[in-house]
Image 1: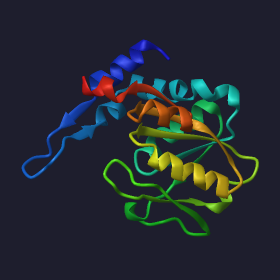
Image 2 (image 1 turned 120 degrees about the vertical axis):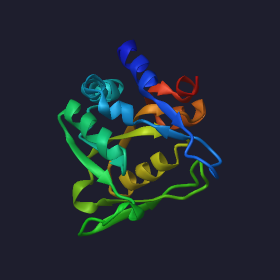
Image 3 (image 1 turned 180 degrees about the vertical axis):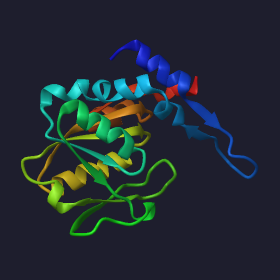
Image 4 (image 1 turned 90 degrees about the horizontal axis):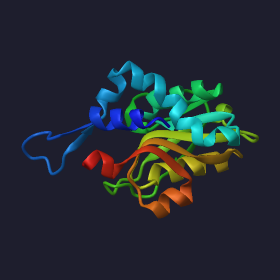
Amino acid sequence: MPAELSERLVELFRWIDPGPGSTHLVSDISGWWRDPEVLAELGPALVAPFRAARPTVVLAPAVTGLLVGPLAATALGVGFVPAHKPGDGRLPAGPLTWAQSPPDFRGRQVDLAVRERHLGPGDRVLVVDDWVATGAQVRALYDLCRTRGAEPLGTAAIAVDCTPETAAELRVRGLVSGADLNA
């Protein structure tokens, strides 16, 4: 991955104070989506560590995964499967397979669903997301893959902020670290 891309991701990132009553800062990754060079480079950079494993599909969770997942799928020349969350709007029609994450960095358990007809035996799945903090959603997505008979190959993320042990266990590769974004 070009060092320039990592530097640009850090440069375009912001922490924002949402105002009175807030107990924490909120990440603002909108600069990543606004920069056409970053958009052009993200897909190829994310998939580079996994290209030799020959993924057949990219799986990504709503909401920001729906932006970065198709970039990765396009770079690989494969299809894309979104994982839906019940609170993010209307769920797709048809049979769904569900999984629930362990508690995430806020202590929430996230429900994720995929359309059954889009993920199945023989699929070699690259999971893609913008940020991996605890690996909780990654675990749920891997559970979805296994339930559907698909093989999770690993996870490509823009920012990796989980422990090195979690990243190794879940085969997470990233373009920047949480420490880079906290600098």
